[in-house]
Length: 384
Ligand code: BGC
Image: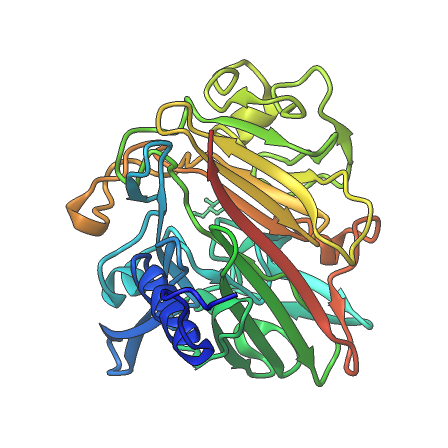
């Protein structure tokens, strides 16, 4: 048989194929990590904004001020992108702000009653920055500290590692705590993975979380009362009037806190219920129906019927604080000049239970020297 006139030599074929592959890749967004200045703190420390993107154009911006997720852009069911996280345009907003927008919360997420706990016979006294109680790590929590940043991207996705050394006695907590948070924008899905780790040189308590406020219709775009929420949790920890857990672990059955099946956030929020009165809406810790602390379990799903955006939260943590943005009151001006009215966002803070150091029946938050604290949460976005 004679060779066809159109046969190309093998080397040439390879070149053609490679050129075609590059052209195809370039027609999509390239996964990348960019760094931009984000302003200076009042005492002159520069902060940066790190923008992590995957090939699909899903984009998350994080600042090393407070380990804060500043924006998260994801498509609706028609492919239209929107930023679904509340926040500020520069570091000064976060420095002056009191809402914990997108911040890494530590050393202890949520409340500790009367700012006191006992560990190994010693009493530790923390700031009372929420009435009589201690909230989200105190006066200058992890969300108001400047973290060190490092690009740790891999084939798993664009990744940013932030680290912070919290000194023995900082905000009243014992032990030098070396904390690390790795934010990864996954290469193969529109998801943000957050991995927390910490070690200490003295027995202490740790409860790290992220305080992102989500509005799946887009930040500053109405309230979230029509969003449908599912919480994979058959129990919650009831609170007193100051939002401190009573110690009881109660079933959600026949209460407006039952989100085992999807329900609109606003459907029962105004019901006459003591827990909703105390929380001024939803502001409670749900006990997740998870099977293991070692692997990720699905914790929550939020769906905005209008945009079609879906948020899935999975975590290794035993609890989740669902907060319906009850303290947002329209006085905060956020990114792009947007106002944030009452309940214009919700938080799903994966965590150990509030006030655990004072409740021996709750999963322990104690970290000892030689132990390694680890916790992972994934926020995954899709559409329906
Ligand atoms: C708390 C709320 C608090 C909010 C801070 C939530 O985690 O549970 O009570 O107001 O954070 O803005």
